[in-house]
Image (cartoon, rainbow, N blue to C red; front, side):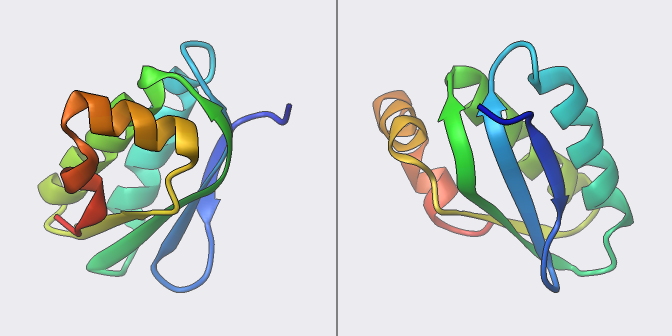
Length: 102
């Protein structure tokens, strides 16, 4: 399994990569907050296509990133949720939030 990271992709895109759990979350949380705040685009897309595995911590991170975007007057749309994240989101009643830009 790879180390987790969040980084800029193509124009307006952020890429979330690796395993999302209690060990990786604190660094991802801060890195994501900084990327969102300094990104020049007013609409961002967060791709989760490269997330290898996630606990509920991953959904918590996504919600935090959405709050960060809102605080920065930006829109954030989440794409490509892996199956494990999608299942947790569905059970938690959060799937609709991640299906549409905020």
